[in-house]
Length: 172
Image (cartoon, rainbow, N blue to C red):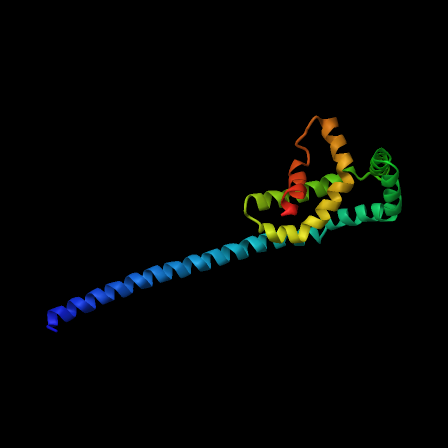
């Protein structure tokens, strides 16, 4: 093979290798970026978990548990008797124990989790794993109170993001 042909061959081969390296490097860079992006989403979700396990949200959860846990048997018995009896008991307990601000604090926190997942800032699967069970129980227990507040404030959007999180996102 003449020298000029060898130069053309090696020049072409070098160009092909450069193209493959650029494409391969770009693909690897994209893969690494996506892995970092996933890790960032998970990290952001875990920051919510951290907040959930610390004051003031933890204190709210402890207070609500301290009120509702001793009343579990009565809640079940009243629900078996009639839904209105159950709902009235829940509303009376919330009023008597002054739980309104605690309920709103937890609604606000859980709605911020929903917003974080909706905006794809937090990892939805991680958020569901950590929050769905508690969010569903909380929403179900306090639903009558939420309805009452929606009516009183003439605001059908009150706790709507929480309701979406519980009824749609948590059922995936």
